[in-house]
Image (spheres, rainbow, N blue to C red):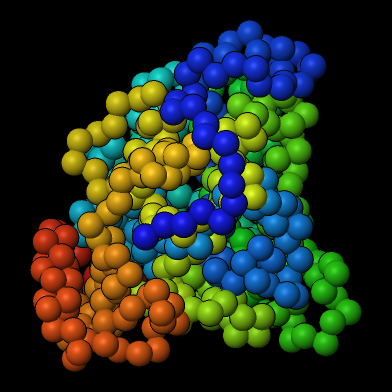
Length: 478
């Protein structure tokens, strides 16, 4: 199920005891050299609605992403990585809890909070002495709920509590920990959640979020840190209609003959790329480059919102479907991992993994105990150059509660999609048909039956997440 396209030296099994690392001569570099047994810093950068085909390293021809393309060249680029869901909140719940959408607390975009018993990556890493920060968009608990970041393992939080507020790139406020930070924007039609369309645009939230992420790294350079940098680009401001691709300037796309939303969409992605480059440069300047593993991915596939046309620049590449679908284009996402001197450079891997694997991977890299009964598997063997030792999933599973309700399961190269939930299965062979154009269900009844059994096994009913006929009010299109 996996191949590696470049040759590299076998690396040690764990980070403990690794020596001979070339470090910067800066004070931070000397400090890291003196404390070679401290666990690695971990950074997870999550884009919002970035498609599989939106980066140059995944075949994009017209949107410029030089920093992410360089990150791919300096680490591993995964071709078969999957988000936790096809929309925001459940995908992030899978990422944080290591449980797929048949088990995790948050399975849709209705605003239910994580509960005290839900263990997050941040809580696991804090047992190893990590300073933990979430900068950006959360989506797993409103203000004063059990699910706010500061109650789920994060020492520091700056950004948006929920996905609706995060639509607005020029809001009147953001959150710093449990305190509102008021901005100089004016939003005359602001709703109670902070959404709306600004009439005076003075402070662009993404730029504030990028600055906070850099400052978090600066503050904690002398201790192990976990930074979850949950960007909002290139999501649309859905409330702004065809003008929803809000960005301060179109930059290099200003003179193209593209529709305005496409200029905005491309400018958002290039701005995101610029700031990832700033973070990687900062790690190098501080002497932390070779002591920090950086993950980059997207929460789901590309969107058709705010006037954006995902077909214009082929945002889903060769895949079928976009956000809100469980076809590959809705859930297969770009995924890069870089860790100089540890993760081999220039590798393209078809190892199949998904967001539930991040928690056990981070726990292993940090030397922390992982919670029991996770759906995820550690990806550390693949990251550290030992793909032959990588455990494989019997299957990956997704369920989705917007109309139409959906289920999907992947086992080996077989992928089944049920529309609606529990309905007739479509069957695809992703090895020969990644675009899911040929339904092979009628010719493979035994495989269909096996994948149906996996779907039944994976789904554990939850009273919060009823199918539409039972409780249509639970559905939330955002």
